[in-house]
Image (tube, rainbow over all chains, first blue to last red):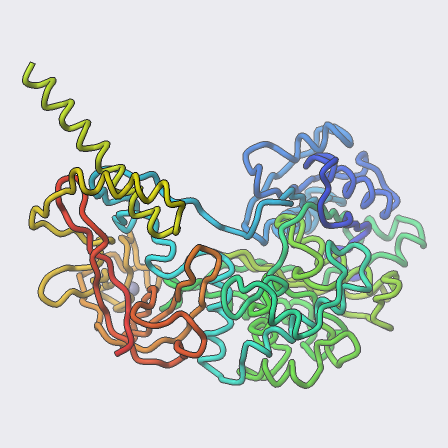
Length: 400
Length: 176
Ligand SMILES: [Zn+2]
């Protein structure tokens, strides 16, 4: 426990899926109470609260959560940062502990999305009688379909196809195989929204959403929450031996945004900022990709998973297709990726996702992942990206 | 009195225009016979007359004999933007000039978006160093017909007339 390190003391994610009887606050409270209990602490120990929620970003979900689990007067930061919202909430808690403002903080990410359909599907504009230029591009109507696509399934399909154009080796079948892997992994994760194994044929013949992604190759919107209690090493030393043994070290915590790239105004560039975040994270942690025992990365679509093998430096530049074909990212491979089932099976309650992926890695490092445990896991990486873009990368290490 | 009449006339023509729009939608959505019939009648009753004016679907499409896409180009680093910027996202320069984007390019990425009533091809086209987002036109939206690296060129097509008879023109890229 080097001075200045921040540790995960308690962590939890709710079962993801349809939760018709729970509202946003119920879900947030469930994860928060469980994370506190997991860490052996209560709200009275928490000095700062970071709360992520995208769909009700103006509603003060953090304060509503306090009313539900404990109003202690501590500062609350409600954050919204696209799909990286949860990781951003966690970064707020980590930064506050690092800055010495408090010795213990909590982050919660929560979303209710079941039945919301696919991400980012905007409605058409109202019709008028004469052509009226509207908005930043002076468009006469909705640009969706008229000027390509700007909604998630198509955008991320293009992200994968762009990789194929650049390096070759991709195909509809390859992308479908990535989905086959994640759905197979999900059968071992009781917290996943969907635990159904699909054959390659089933995936390829399912409803096409945006070629080359069929329905099982897209992340499902669902309800869920995740929470995490973080603690300074000075405070951790004063806690019980049992708490210390289960604590997980946050070796790196990084958040990046898009640096300028020529094509980023027409197709979001999810690559450069992820690569930057990964490089910074490896540097912070003092490790390399070869030291990782497992990775949870942001597979909002099967096409996205492929490019992030490369962006997170899990393979040679341009070698993502070969990396996948080698079997490396399967749970029994050399670099298990998304053993939780990934967002394609686990589900994607947006603001919870960026904490849930860290929960998954931490659970393996604690040796508590039961059926899906990656044996002897000591170091893991969690990645999340929100379009626009914001990328969070965290590297975790098992307590020595 | 005259004013009122002209107002109500305008109202009527507005209503007709809405019906015309409905007709288009109905056709697209392959709607019920009933809607089609009704819409057809409306179109016959009064269709807007061409006034000779055209308007581009987006302001960076420049119409004329040879239509082209126009970008705002940073004077210091030549980064291009289809919308306005206060400072260049690439170099922070604050001076821009208008630049003509090449009309030919190659498809560097695409997706066949199948969520609506009709599938369409969304593509990124590299026009000699300037990336353009577009819908591909004049090509069947199947993975057999659309390929990475295929050469394409800018093409325009009419979207229809408004109540004043102005014609909207949209762009796409078609196989070259
Ligand atoms: Zn510039």
